[in-house]
Image (cartoon, rainbow, N blue to C red; front, side, top):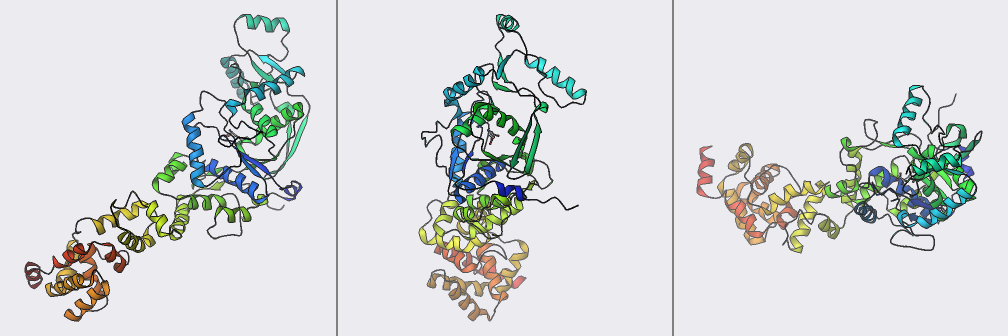
Length: 493
Ligand code: GLU
């Protein structure tokens, strides 16, 4: 009867959020994407808001897909965003190492414990056999799960397979007839039947530990109290709880955040534009804009203004994590970006626009230029156009705008050019001289000046733009319309 609420109901209250030890556990298989950044951010905020710790773990056991360059990129992108960890691959402590590829010893020990209890068995099924079995189940309308082919092989049968040179993977013997229940601190109470879960691989044929196993073992041995991760892992949780139980290890509280989707409701992907931190950074988006947007995607907060990470930590509430998919829209990112630019100091703005600004620009001109253009800039590309206008060759007005210049007349510009020379690019002095010469005021006075100086009828505030321009440029841009040929064409018009 009542509508499904979007935030965790009362059951969330059963889970305490005190000194939460959280982690972000990316697999270094590609660039850091917005969905992952949001997970990292929420984990950081959960740790900071509860007086706990935030850990970074690199899940690089999948040697085929993991790349060192991706791992380095992840760390760099997180640092750039200001998402800082208390322990991680570059900040080891007694709970480390924080790279799974360096934890083979830990996994071997726990694997041996499962083996001693007879809770794992070797599986000799080939990928092809597994795939066929899977297809057959799907065709029969059953959810695919391991059929148990190797579960009860006799020692002789196992020996025969080994003699054929088949290296087995090892599967966890999922107990039958169990109900596995837990409180997801985002989604509420969860219940799974062990009979729906096939025996799953904990150790691959090459001897490396598999995801369900190493991920759960690491959470326990690193002292993680709260696992907050993507919804795509929700169905993995009962498997991981079974492993932890079998090993006598403590289970963390689990929460699964909703997916990030594009404006069309489809999972966020390339076709929604730039979605990796690397791409957004290259386009000039700032950490503050990205974090402020993500803070609101799937997390409702009464704080509507632009927040620093510290302020976000104070405002974060895990009970306000939403269950429905959160929509990412670049337009919203641009709104936060505008706010971020508005808050930049001139020094920061100069660094941010470093590649767009002329390299040898003096302090005074840079400051005047930024003051003039920043109110109209969202991304560096917006500043580039004005860099060309202010510091490049004199812009040629369109035919239509040129008429405004001709109407004002050569004497108007002669007076303006002289005033520019005398005053050192002071707009009020230039305007006063042109007014005294022509009797013009308001738009009739300023529009011809603007067109002569910038080649267009609108743009940033003119006074600081002139202060940014080299003195000779202002004089020359005005004087070019003060020549007799200019006045002749004015007469002719
Ligand atoms: N390495 C896994 C991933 O990137 C981690 C999942 C988890 O957070 O437990 O999806």
